[in-house]
View (tube, rainbow, N blue to C red):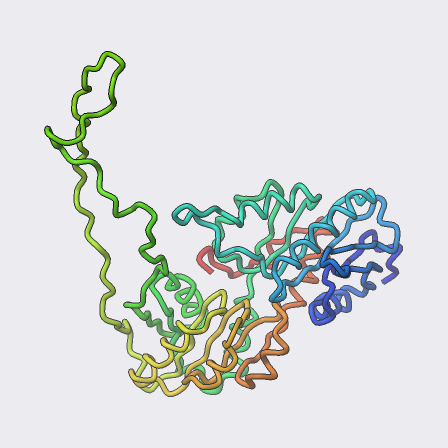
Length: 370
């Protein structure tokens, strides 16, 4: 396809060569060339973006994969979007397969909803649309003031199960926590397989920090605190105490597996695999219950810290993730990690958006809970 006649450009905002692999695969499928730009870090670690061709009046797609250095990748995307906006691009569409900070989408104690902040920053930088994949919570789409297409990786992972796992009919889909049960149920129904749920792990990692939650209200005391001193010298009536019902503390129940996994292939499904401790623990439980092979299927393989080593030493037989996040280094460290390419659906989404076609075809047979 002639780039000049296509009516749109595709750029990569990554300064790292490893992060541009997905962008190259997408442009090859689209039959266009990757836009000419330079993204680099100066000696003082500031990000600089130079767009090397005219984008006036064009629809621009920015492909940004998120490496381990998340904050640098975000700045690269913001600066690239703003550079294109000031260069008079007509529309700027971000293709962000893994949306960063998606786990910080709820208020925690005195924290903040960082995901909403990032959505506002992207809008201010000039983005007018986003294509992403398997948001950690679907409600995140409500943080944006522009359209968001949340694609699904499940068709590719299900195809992998059917084609690459021998005797997958003897498998059972496992949710490693009750919170993941709906996603697991969606996989089980489409594969016509059984469902098991691991129950008993802590569902929230919040620690009892000294944040004031244990400070009791003032109690009724007629001889104690006398309130504020008034100028007249008279004492105010005692400040009344507040009597609240006692809240029962949560207790972690014993770990149980709801469902029979004995003599079966266990396939744990989730959207993100980062800190693999929970997955390793789940694999050990499933082995104890009689599962003879254990697979992990996840969309985003962040695989931080010692994840490759822990996977290699665990009872997990294989970890299957998509290429929404670059993880070639982790694959060299652990041969159990396998990759499924999702560039096809991202390229098709770009083509349909540019041509003004419906996106419904990309969501066929996809359930709300998937």
